[in-house]
Image (cartoon, rainbow, N blue to C red; front, side, top):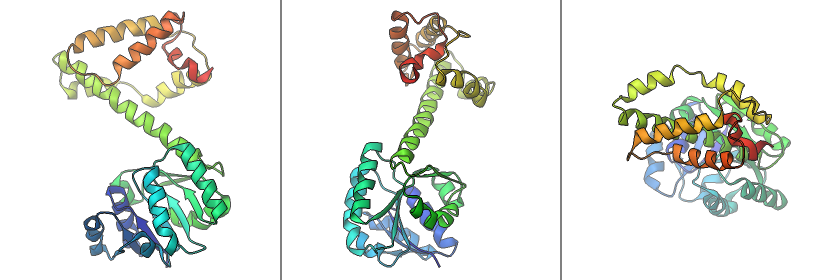
Length: 282
């Protein structure tokens, strides 16, 4: 029977712990706020007094923490109880350069470590849905692949580049957060113009995001900016949006407008609006 430790039982960590216990794994949990971990006892999860106590005798350890500093602190506290063959699977969203340095240092010290960030919320963690990325030594991944597969809807091993999963997680979150900010701005312009969020949603549902990505997105990635929607015209439309919003706060459009102004001043106004990515792809 698989025996795991969950270090960090916030919303996502609790979801992982509940799912693991439900599928019959032996689960030990630790959290700074003990009350959050205690809530898992109803599922048969044992609550440990310290990270070192939590990791003793387990097959692998799952970290779901706040940031790089928390990862360093909790692993340091767990080292006294960590078995020589225990693999740490770190699901924390972390800074790529720090992740690479940490993974290399742990490898030199004999600590078995994989970085395994996820694209999932608590319901997906409980239902083994969503996506999990993994970077690190192939030999370690091979040992935990079966169990990680049971924790997620899609498992993708990215290879031995130590920071690649961290990079991909930031790229994905940039897309998620950016889309959310743009949706918020659509709602803001709609409100200022006397329309409801539901009416704004009807407009957004006219578009196919996947088609936009496969069209303009791929052209942008290739550095091709043949105009279909000229930058100057797009900038004019953003001016109209901002004028319509008036005093209402906007999350993304002002920053986009400022970037467009720089590019227009540099002579890119007649190119496609996708030229906004020129410094990243050329």
